[in-house]
Image (cartoon, rainbow, N blue to C red; front, side, top):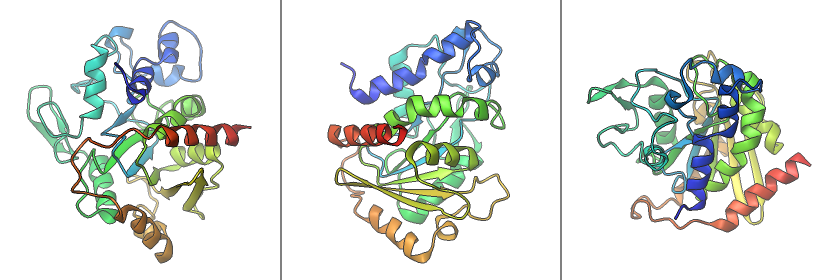
Length: 278
């Protein structure tokens, strides 16, 4: 039986809008979908998230995943259950999985050199959780789930994709305390959806709802010319201490993958999003 998180994963992996674009319909997602000039069955699927999202206390939200046509990565025609496992277990370090949070698996076996974005994200996680385990203490997601190079198609697809899926993704992050929003495209959409007023001058926002607290921090993208790529430089000393204190309660010695699904938090985030859109 599928749990709620798997249903969210499946809905993104087999996004109805992607299929409609491939069938020739003109939608806001058409430009980014057209990056892959292949039949639908061979299309690299949208990336819902990477890691055990239901365990992560820290979640990084960026613009969209990059694409490598040679990557050993799920295609639309692959078994959906295997694709779900691929994304949840992707950071676990085994064959075909990301090793040490930074090395991508190669189709012929073994791993690539360090992926710069993953390496930067891991360093940001270490700022807050010195012994952070990739995929357990932190996870990755995006405002646009389809893949492209250099954010092609992100501006056009951003609102459609984020409004359709981001509230459900945040609802699945049942243990998350801190959301690090990386880059201009991501922060504009996250800020608009949830009324956060994050920008270059305001890097810290907090939402309190139904007894839950969520902190959002805006970081410059690692590949940008921005100078506030680290929590320590983006935040005031007081804000930085507050973010670290929120994550200090994390029990790093807890058994892996055992956290229960908190459906009450999922409902509260979803209702928060509905409030922001009304």
